[in-house]
Image 1 (cartoon, rainbow, N blue to C red):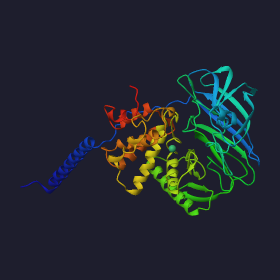
Image 2 (spheres, helix red, strand yellow; image 1 turned 135 degrees about the horizontal axis):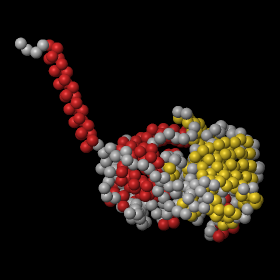
Image 3 (cartoon, rainbow, N blue to C red; image 1 turned 180 degrees about the vertical axis):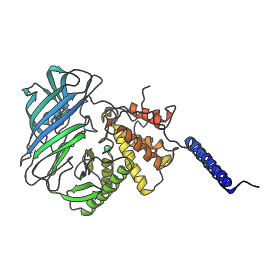
Image 4 (cartoon, rainbow, N blue to C red; image 1 turned 90 degrees about the horizontal axis):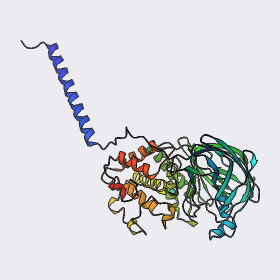
Length: 480
Ligand SMILES: [Zn+2]
């Protein structure tokens, strides 16, 4: 007699379970050995400390003639391990005064004017020294780790015409870096480099801001704030946390196109009758914002403003586009520029780096993200084999991409070469999806932290599981 049907069924079920287990184990074994899954479980990111935490409270009043009265209070906390004898701020409005421009061998038909009324430290009038964009304030008593100090600045200025970012453009006022910005403190000293008219020579950590403004009737106020409507109030206040800086544009006659992406309101401010172009710009802005949110992480505000009068430049929650160092660019390039500045909301806006010493980390990653968007949209093949053709033609093509700004004659290394070398890491590692995964992992580790080249290299070694640095040393100068 054969086995009873119940036994047979049990044996059959056992066999199926064993078979399934074997298949599962084989699959596990195979996926472990075939996939290039980075082993990042033991990896913990490090951040470069900014050495201070600050709260800025800014009161801005503009009159009909473009005179600005500013009261700025900064509450500073020393988070470095050193005791400070002085405070060092960037004060960029002073760069555009006749006197500073002359010292730097520049001139403008209409330079800025600046008058500092008073600087108070803990409510006591203080000495200070202002030289070009360096504002030095000596302290009566040294400020230790964990100590707070409050500094008030009272000053007035007019904007230059033909300035950089801090400038009057046509009838519009662009207020970038218009308040004293405390420098970072690291390696036992203030990290403040000399101003340059190319690149970004100022660097801060993430700080909190409170702004109150009062502007003439015929203008609208457009800024880092996510709460503004169009036209803006004549007087209002806003608050924003964890941003490197704030930007304000005070605009006269504008053509505005608004577009919603989920809960984010995109506003395009144009100054000519080019409605079609502004619509197209709002479309590409919305597509790229959506793409970056999908592949990288959430955009941190509920509004994004695009001001189409000015140099391609990123600020938290607001960007400008239209020209490169004073030269206007064709409409198609303005669209690319907008995508680039939007990508900066992640690389600069949320992942911090020192743009004087490590400009490639925001410009290179931003350009890389910009081209990711382009390839993802167009389904174009990534041209690995010809990628370096243009780069090989630039002056000093072999220079690494992570040198300070004063070591380059142009910016091709930090934008073009850096982004292309990032691409080449994926030449043998799979398709666009791998590059997207990489950029997401990098963001997940470093959002609201500051990265430097050394830390990027540490991350890349883990991520790509590379035993030697030969893929990195061809384009990065690495200390061992
Ligand atoms: Zn950029």
